[in-house]
Length: 143
Image: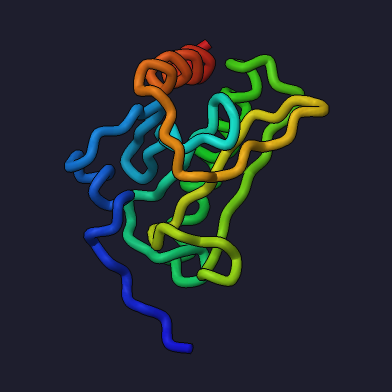
């Protein structure tokens, strides 16, 4: 099956360009991290490289070091910010894996013993909750 080329109109590319608002928690020259608007748990954050690639399978290897350095920073920050027992880090490649947005991204979700992830149902979180959670993570990143 032939892969479709990278689409610069995907939702994450639009967020990176500032065409769609987001609750950003981190940004540097290579990577942006922002709140998932359909979180599977409180503090669910997405870490996205600025370089265009559909997923891990076609990314320039030079993109991966900065991306995963930030994934680690964000995972530590969400664990601290939410007093979590751990953090789940997920990354999907192609439809068979569950990928639905074709811009490389990594999910970072704080986890708590005995509490399952919510399904990714399409129900959007209230903006004020996302803003409050983003503030918690930003404070944990600097503290």
